[in-house]
Amino acid sequence: MTNVKITVKAHGPYIVKGDIQLFDTAGNPFPKSENGYALCRCGQSGNKPFCDGTHGKVGFQAAT
Image: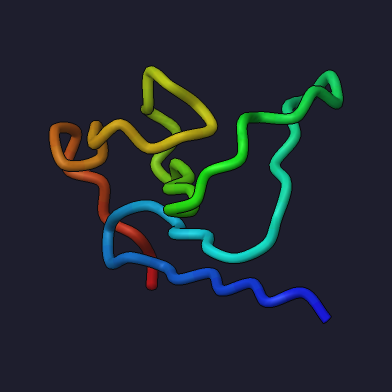
């Protein structure tokens, strides 16, 4: 069984850790990350799908 943990950060990204492979829209794999991935939730990142911290600059407020 795959061990994956997804943590929703308050007003920030999704933190995804575990034995996963992340693919882009064309089906190409992103390089594996031993530290996991921080995935953008605000939609404003300049490095989508990854979080670049822009949520703090734009004042992103999550519903939950």
